[in-house]
Amino acid sequence: MKKILKRSAVFVIIIAMTISFFSGCIPSPCARVTIEGTNFIVNGKKLWLSGGNTPWYNWNDFAGSMDEDKWTETFAMLAENNINCTRIWVNCNGNQIVRVDPKGKISGINDGHWSDLDKLFSLAEEYGIYIMATLLSFDHFKAPNWQALIKSKGMTDEYAEKYVAEFCKRYGENEYLFSIDIMNEPDWVFENRECGQIPWDNISYFLGKCAATIHDNCKTLVTVGMAMIKYNSDKYEGNKISDEYLKELTGLDGAYVDFYSTHYYSWQKPYFGLPFKGDPESFGLDGDKPCLIGETSNDDEKNFTMNLSDVYKSSYDNEWGGILVWMEPRDKEEPMWYRFDLTAEAANQMAEYAYDEIYPIGKRK
Image (cartoon, rainbow, N blue to C red):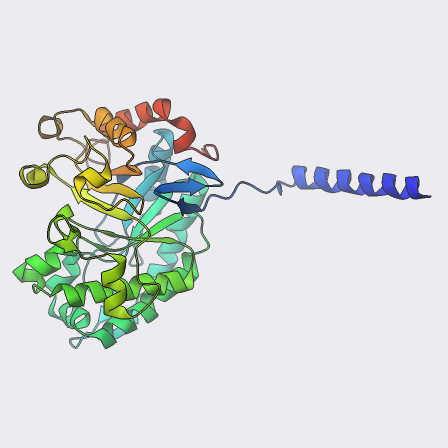
């Protein structure tokens, strides 16, 4: 009788596995990016981000009029050329998406924004491309209403609770939402008159509050795309997104970034050197978090003193967690992203150089 029961149990298991196989229900490896030490990790294996910026196709793409065909074409191009991550501005400026009244109070959020982002993150999952989603830019703060928002802790808290928390609840379960970039280049909100020259205490409180809100609502990694190492390092003007500073300003344990995403262009070279030729610590970042170059030129061989393929390889060899080069959109020219040929060549060569770390769970398309 026991033998019959055992055979029956085995038979049931075999049938269940067969049904699972033919119904496409075999669990796929977890694609969520986590962190161990200074490395990005996927499913227990190291991930290296061989990426780009496709920041927008049409400025403020995701305000209810997303060009789904163009974005589908973009994801297909990225996947075909071994680019495993892209940085996208989900909100470029102004009130098209998050509406703010003259006093800095949230007056509403465009419903079309959410329906567009549903499509965007579905494409990321379909093509297996990680997205760094940039929620805001310094461009917002050219408007007095956004300056009023960031100067007020109450209005900042409202933004975090009404928009950032909702974003996390909607998309935080998507494993291809690699990270949330709270703001593009807040350095200019501090430095530029047209952005209000807001004190760092206000800016960093905003960043810390948003970081804590993200950590409270999802498992997605958090970063800030700093314009330059100047405000991301104690070697220079102080790290304005350090754990200590953000927690001191907000009083919140979750006020921290998970990794650094410093931007670099060759105008910075006389002041800070080249990041690609050394490791993140030698460039001025602390050695406690993963570091990637979140934005840089893809066509500056003269000033970088190396071609783009060598920039990728040197960044990898020097233990940067990845590199995301800038590509402006092109409406009527080919390819549809500026000098995509250079980015594609570099990314394809990197796939030969470090395939297992670019695709730790295999390539989807």
